[in-house]
Image 1 (cartoon, rainbow, N blue to C red):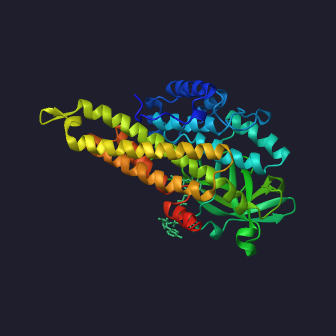
Image 2: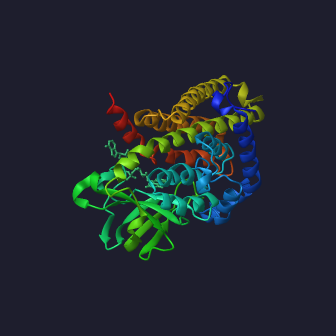
Image 3: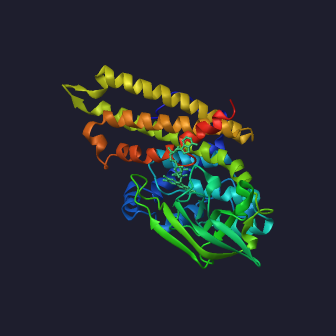
Length: 387
Ligand SMILES: Cc1cc2nc3c(=O)[nH]c(=O)nc-3n(C[C@H](O)[C@H](O)[C@H](O)COP(=O)(O)OP(=O)(O)OC[C@H]3O[C@@H](n4cnc5c(N)ncnc54)[C@H](O)[C@@H]3O)c2cc1C
């Protein structure tokens, strides 16, 4: 039973989208059932095989043109994939980052040769993508990035350390934020693609131990005189990195909001079912007015968030989503997601604290949503600039 009463926006109700949604749901039921996801959590990493399976099913690079091996769809297809993953609790398999963050940098800023070289491999799952911005000394303050890419003949020599990098253990293609001219600050920052099997001097550090998203291989990366050809620069020239990041980050921020709403809807579904079953003091939990009021509040808040996010998806499809509005979606929805999931967890009582209950894992996974993609405080800094 759907958690909310309202309909989705019309552009998400078109027949091909509805058919696609059903096929994504089937794929996840078949290839990512809870028993398999639990094994990934235990291992701290998803199997490489799931990437190939998703590639074969046509679920990677959904909005990349067919000419480059993509599915030739648009952002609505990515929305469907992200929502289905969240609704089915497939946490840690970050196809959304690969599809909506990594691949678009190559599509928008890659040369024809780079697009033909990398996008088909990302679409098939032969290559798993990552983006490495954060460093031990630079997260929110990206201008403080220390990783350097020094020109040496027809190569860049990369030195530095990255941390908290999603897909870090598995990644075959990493977009690295590096200073090509450290004297020029933001204007000396570039995006350089590292193909991990070809870059001598590239090392993977720890697969980090997190409080949630255990199946995700969030990692440290080390570059010790790593050499990559100058043809791996996402150009057309050096120094474009910051502008490119600023142009692409709104989509990343919107995706966090999209996952946030789908997570709230799942939390509501699970909790409503639970409180209708569980009894205390001779009645069902749903019969207590406190339970009804708490869930009425959660449902109202999730509904407001759903309408907001669908409107922003529409704006984004029209190319009209600005950075500040995307930041509102990221910070406000992820804050609300944490509040709603926490309220729902409380209604599960002791079971809510047990990892075998999905609501417990959702509580832990949701926490990262307020931190990554730019912390919620940084979102407010960006919004405040428009006041
Ligand atoms: C699970 C996970 C996955 C991630 N995946 C990736 C990835 O794939 N690639 C990648 O590059 N990074 C990734 N990150 C890193 C993430 O983007 C950073 O953690 C985030 O941007 C915050 O940076 P920081 O950790 O250095 O915190 P800091 O910048 O040190 O911030 C610490 C605190 O200070 C606050 N703060 C900082 N500056 C200001 C300010 N100007 N005003 C007010 N408050 C401020 C922050 O909001 C925060 O609360 C990931 C992080 C996590 C947890």
